[in-house]
Length: 293
Image 1: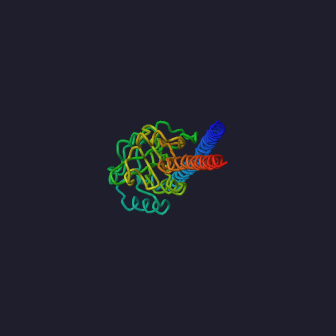
Image 2 (image 1 turned 120 degrees about the vertical axis):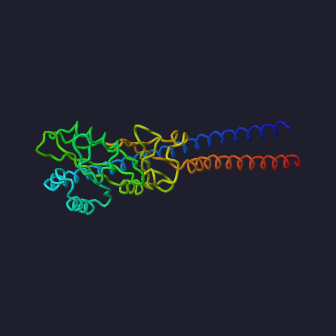
Image 3 (image 1 turned 180 degrees about the horizontal axis):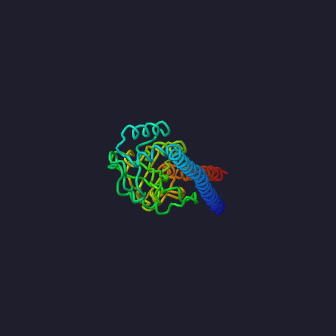
């Protein structure tokens, strides 16, 4: 009887030690999984945020070059905004230059449009941005020649704006103002995403509000336009996009992560169960053998 008890205690200790080892190993695998995901997410987010910033800088440079190249024509439009042929000609050239072009206008430094045929496209938010850009403009400082990019939720035409100074004979320049759809920005997010993962631009000044996803601007997405509390709690990796009111976040597939972690512990449970059953069977076999003897 004593030998059977000793054998049972040895089996119990062996099972407990095996369980402890499996728990430690499973926790280590879980942490390695999380660390690997975090490293991957940081790489993707930094790369995508950089690509978005470069795209906006490229837009800024080309808009400024366009304003310089067509300064004479734009100044003619500014002083004689009724010249529809010239206005249409500039619009055609902008469409040829930018595939995501939406519209353009010329405003004074207070954000008041000079092209009355499209002034309805310039909302209050746009006018505030133009006024800030004009007030901060310093021709000797390249940084102040870049306006802060934000999403403008105009019905049916969500867009962002790029501005460039249009110098005239007056003390303060007019503003050459070009609006763009979000297709190219959405494509950058889409091409950087992994399967079942999402890259999302949210508004930095309103961190639950979605601005752009790989599907497009906020008006095109097929989900709630705000992050849920659970999603907010699981945002571990993000990057602010320079020169914008955007923050790029990495939203992992929460179900996939939970499923993988659950599978780790399920695997550990199966192993300990097999070890326990095998040792109990061995104990029973040895006990029967000792009775026969």
